[in-house]
Length: 116
Image (tube, rainbow, N blue to C red):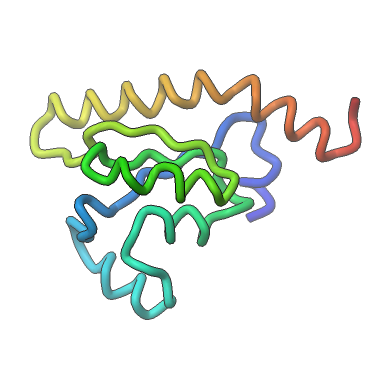
């Protein structure tokens, strides 16, 4: 947690939820055990203070404003990776999002440390 809070670069997560469903692995089970709702907005709230941005699948665009209310910037794009091109596209979208957030994150962390 400390390393994430002190990172000099944006910390971005990719929501494992698409269309209200966890798409892979034991995500839904783990989220239920932790008491986290099965939405991207719930994920944003859970990681508040640890991440700067959350990538949400375009199918869940209606949740973007709610996730943003947790103080986390949101990027909408296709997140389901069924091919190598899908993986490349998502990676490019996450990197572009990080680049856009970089200046904001640096400024916010300096101000949080009492800098001016």
